[in-house]
Image 1 (cartoon, rainbow, N blue to C red):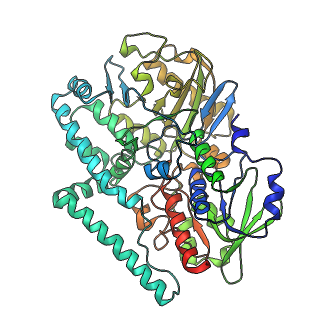
Image 2 (image 1 turned 90 degrees about the horizontal axis):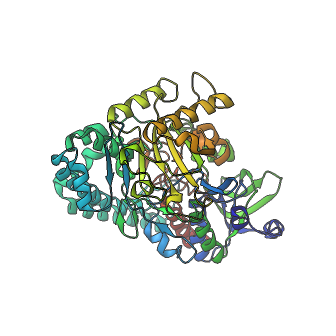
Image 3 (image 1 turned 60 degrees about the vertical axis):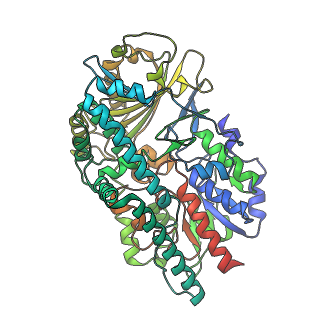
Length: 567
């Protein structure tokens, strides 16, 4: 089903080769690449998207790997996708349907208690009061502060960075660039003034502090702190005691669904439906999309300008500009001839942090819903807890720290921490009647464990069983309900999806790898040392997640270049 929906027809390869020159070629059909392509085509450019795999979407794909069960193989919930992209590309008209959960967060405890949040403010207060009345009051102030900071950061996310102008430029270009930078900083100053001095200091404290320090300051309940700390570790090997880990916490609460902040929704049809909707919008705008088409090299003229790509089958395709949706490492260490790159730039790319990633994604087919003993209700139908993000192993911040320390010592966590979601609890299109799809986002797993290899089937199975056995402690009967599963370790994510180091963000999301320093200092505005080559993936500003902002911002930069240089 999904392969037929997302690939082009059999005759399109010939059409691709027959065109003499494209305005733009996009390398990689992940969601950011498709978004860039859609905006460029809507502006009148001829655009081709080239995807190595048999389907587009990158890490936002739905695949039926067990008959009848459709897995969101990598990304699994939607919140960060910028609302203007949904609106401007009319993604809902193109089939995007978001399913808001009945509750946002469920954290079971082995002592028989649990915390279920996100049903209503009144219910949240009652839930948190079971553990601490003080925390129940503080929680709403904490949420209000994060929402205020998120609104401040909206402006930064949706704008290309005010990068310095690289290389030679005409007087007109220099003045235009200076005006754009001045406008950005003026708007930034306005937003900062609106925060006030106290708000600005509070924001800096959050961005620079360890997550543990931030949460200890606000709360006393160990279960609540551990639940909230989960947002700060997603996709990272970062310890919650590490300074700067607070930003990742904020990064994962700055999203929204239909205007409601910090709501992570399921997507009908799985995360591939997001890519499919973007794909339809792009095709409607005239974008030509090719799957099973691997780019071997970006072609660069002697003058240092990119002028197209060389395919793995030897075909040369020419274009005015090339946009890479691949990781910065893949782009500059493998696709671009190194002779055209400054030594300092190449070194910075080579030593960028892709190792801060400890994620293994396990997608599970089960024959019944898990029943959590702490809820003391066994029903065949889904309850609010099943629709929520379920935190397994998040009973204290010490448990998170211990799991991370195992991986820092070179071994997978003895007791992994997991975000568990059950999309079939709300979506009956992805599993057979009465059966369910379960997504496990597990941490921490080193890329190269010291006590074994992910290439070893028994080693892989032992880790999966470790995760299933941990769930069994909270939901007896889970292990016997498993029909089958698909598992993506960090090397699998690199090999199959193209994520360098298995890093879901195309690079670390620490404070030293964001904004003007993403992907490297001096090249944060989607441009590269190769003229006419641009980055449009998550390795560029503002970073990772199914956000779409890198793709949209890159398209804006390219269109400005076309306006001043190519027309």
